[in-house]
Image (cartoon, rainbow, N blue to C red; front, side):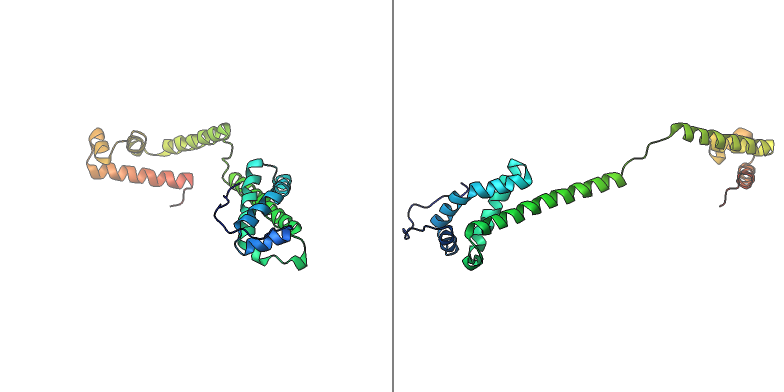
Length: 195
């Protein structure tokens, strides 16, 4: 049991029905609440377990139910029904809430996984596309003047800076920049790339 009976409490008259135990518990009588727990917890736990089907979660929900009963026992109205049906109604509601919560969480996780799932990568298609693009670039490079082709090839495929291109081609820096710029403009126009 998750609470202890205190031995120094004043003895109350014997309580016989579950309804009397709930009313006594609503006045703070821990002994009455302990008796209520002892007499009803197997049925409450059994109902929760049938709904949840996980013993650990059923035990946790059962504990929550009795905590709620302790706090809400003053709201119990024997005129509306007996104590055991009242307890089982609370238990059923809590167990269903736990199942719904778990299902909602699972649905949310599934939706997230589906939305963030990596799409299969088609390497053959990607390689074919890359090869076609490379062929188009080679064709357009062939249409440049030899000076432009050499400057663009050094700058963009060789990885050289404009200054290094000018030194390698033995031309002024401005001439190297002009050849690269003009070559790129012609390539852009030929490939249909918009700026």
